[in-house]
Amino acid sequence: MEKVSKIKAEEEKQKKKEAKKVAAAKEAAAKQEAQKQQQHAAKKIAKPSAATSDQDSLSQDMSALGFESKAQAKAPPPTPPPSKLPASKRINVEEEYVKRSGDKPKLNLVVIGHVDAGKSTLMGHFLYDLGQVNDRTMKKYERDSQKLGKGSFAYAWVLDETGEERDRGITMDIATNYFETPHRKLTLLDAPGHRDFIPNMISGAAQAEAAILVVDASTGGFESGFDANGQTKEHALLARSLGVQQLIVAINKLDMMDWDETRFQEIAQKLGAFLIQAGFRKSNILYVPVSGLTGENLVKKSTLPSLTGWYQGPCLLDLVDNLDPPVRQLDKPLRLGVTDFFKGSGGVSVAGLVDAGHLQVGEQVMVVPGGEYGTIKAIQVDDETSNWAAAGDSVLITLTGLDVLNLSTGCVLCSPSKPVPVTTSFTAQIVVFDVKIPITCGFPVILHHQSLDEPASIIKLVAQLDKSTGQVVKRNPRHLGKGSTAKVTIQLSQRAIPLETFKENKQLGRIMLRRGGETVAAGVVDQILTFGS
Image (cartoon, rainbow, N blue to C red; front, side, top):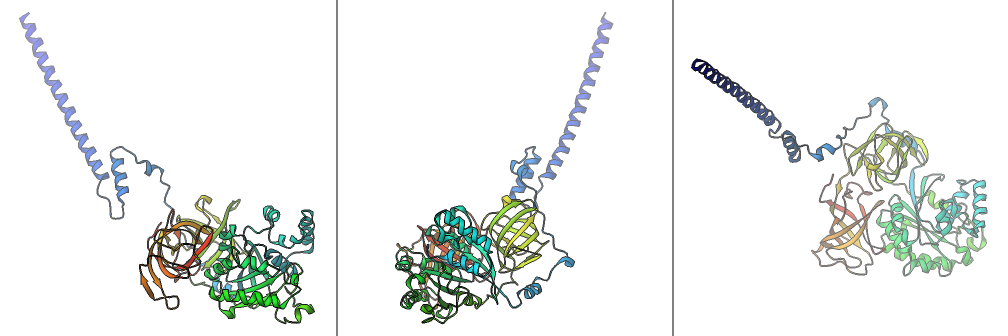
């Protein structure tokens, strides 16, 4: 028995030794595996390169430790770099532009004036007499307007196409039409006259190089538009501030005054003094007596003795035909301000005016803000299909490879290699209009820029300037009153917008400031202070 006990004890010792060896082996294996994992993790959380952001480094650290960053998981794939159009498919747009222009350069013309001055009727009759509206369509407008008891609105319906505009008898949005004169190709922009739709008027005037200001010559008609809360003065101020230099004043409804010369001269004298004060040169202001309803003196010189007895000047068409075409910025980077967009079957359709540069089918463009890319599939210029477009063209383009959600009214399509800056703050040189209260630091405004209107504040009055020389009169003034010229700092309240200095791009460098339904100032961008993405 004693011998058996010794044998069992020896076996137990042997088992314990083997168990210790197994445990030691497992421990060694575990240590080795742990070392491998530490080395692997160390590689993942190594110091990031200079091009790697702190956020990227943090995401890598979290991933190495077994935690996935939610932001990283949801981040969209990076936008591919823009591809260049092969040289074999590239069009020499500047050569094509010269060929197309020929003896008929293009001009964008906006029609402005107080509500009920007769703008739409005048221009509708003008387009009909030019053959832009066929007789069948005109007859339909006459029948339909008479059914509503608005027979005198038939010509206005040529431009006022929506049911609401026809029911209310006023223009609410910009109506765009195209016509030719013997020496010009024109895009006609009919702007709303009602004060509630001033933002739409600004959007239209921002696209124009010349304007027709329509005034009502009937008894009390001119006065209601020119005095007090009328829109004649504000429209003229806005047009000049937005770069319009040539102005045709169409003194309308003069037939209701039996073509009275005294009434014509009275209006021309009162209005002329104001227009010169607003910044128009006297030589660039032209006056013409017309009747939008009867069509007198629109496209043919009048033969009425009551008019020709004192007026032997040109008709409206002759004045339009002699407007000076602008110098286009074809050599600048592409800038196309978006005024409308929608999703179609072949891609995303975008409407707007080419402010600078040129574009062609097959090219890629960048959307700013956002930095997304789209490829141009098709182009329409003035409602006609084209392979290219250039500065001054009103276009409708179809883009592929772009989500419509990446577009917004007021965004800019631009050259991917030279995108337009995006900013939330900038300095501007402004001219103060007739303000009810002086402008002080923190003055809230609505900033209008092309088709954009954004809340903003004047956060600093940098300096008051001499109107004539632009020299500093007073630094850090406490307030700005009517007629002041000043340099100010403006801060956007909600988001960054595409903007350029006036020196770089005249269209993208102009701004309007409004408050309480009135225009308080206009100006040009001097310096961009902050840059967005």
